[in-house]
Length: 115
Image (cartoon, rainbow, N blue to C red; front, side):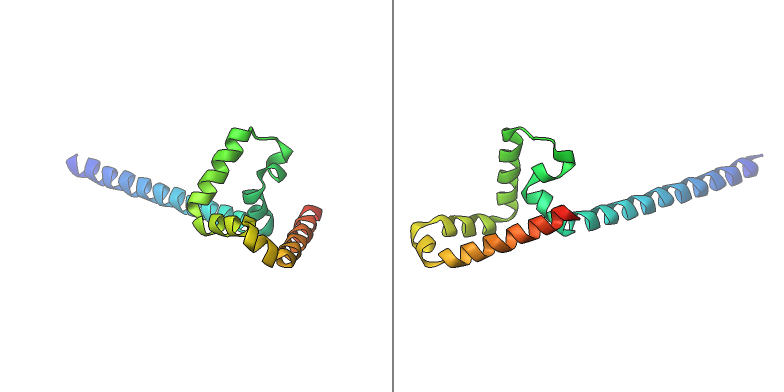
């Protein structure tokens, strides 16, 4: 009788491990698909401008401020480049570059919104 229970217990454990492995595989697939969605141009645009995503719902300013803060903590180079672009000396020297970059960003945003 003990052998029967141990063989049943072993079979149950094996099935539980198989089920857990299947759930983990599904989780990995879901996370990879989610990562792929977030790395599309539209997903990256929604990272920078969250109002364009999520059905056009408006977020409170505090959420936008916290998102900007976390983004600047994650990518400090973007913050330093932004302050360099806003400084007076840099503003006079690279005015045309900023206009060109703005035009490219506007073109990409309009192209992404059409999709």
